[in-house]
Amino acid sequence: MSKTKTPITAKQVVDFERFHFSEQQCNQLYDMICVDDEINLDVTLPHEITFRYTQKQFIESFIISRQLWLEGIVDQQFPKIIRSLCISSKITEENKVIYKMVRAKFKHLCYAYRGFDARHKRPFLLGNITGLLGLIQDGFKNHKSSIVLPNALLLNSLWNEQGLSLLKREAYRYFPCDLNDFTSALYKRVAFIQEQVQNSSTLSAHEFHTLRKQMSMFSALYGTFDVLYPSAYHHQVFQYLATINGLMGDYHDILIEKKLNKTQNYFFDRFTLPEAISTRLAVFINHFQHG
Image (cartoon, rainbow, N blue to C red; front, top):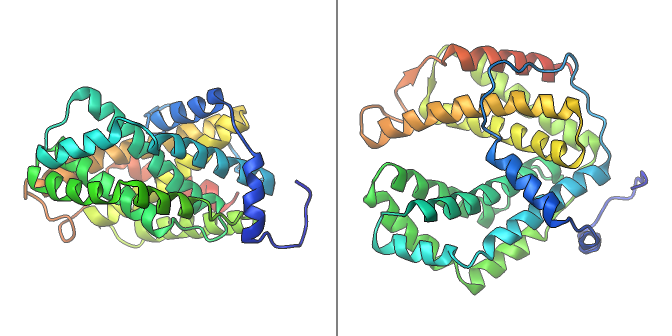
């Protein structure tokens, strides 16, 4: 896409439907999502972080994320899984796989909005349903029917023709960012992470989760770059970010278990970051500040 100073309007967004990705590319993106928390303690960041992207690349990165998400919400088995969770908080191993797949596609589109949309935030309904999917998953993973049943009922009330139509309408409102938008947003997030990590020696579980969501977004963005624009550089950055994401995800599972078992307050009890996480966050901050 040639550079232009003319802002891209909502009307022009419709034209982006000319971007279409193959089944193989979408499968590669989903495979990436499945390993965006894979831990490799031996991987390091490249010596230099560079931002050499075009607006067309940001558009392509968003569109493939949206295409993958659209395939997720038409899954025929998912509404049946929701309805079954309204009756019982138990879920089969086979249905867990389907549930995890749909939730992962929702989360990835949220990250695509935060990274590749000029507003750098997820839409209201998409964000809230993604959060609801997470609550339900935490509930059935920890055998808490008091969490699963009411939230499954709420999700079921939204998962219908009208609700999905509203979701799709949200996902067709996309305002592409340019390179300045992208780098500015990333630097702000890095500054936020630095403030949270360096200004206090301890964190609450809630603050930790907020940090983890930031790192998950970075992992998702660079994973998408690695799929669409494969290079040793993108793969190395993605692996490093995925390692941090995975370490934080494993630790957050422990924090959720403590919260549900009422052995640690999610908002008020504080703890020190594990060294494996804090050292890698420090390296991440240093590299991305000077990208």
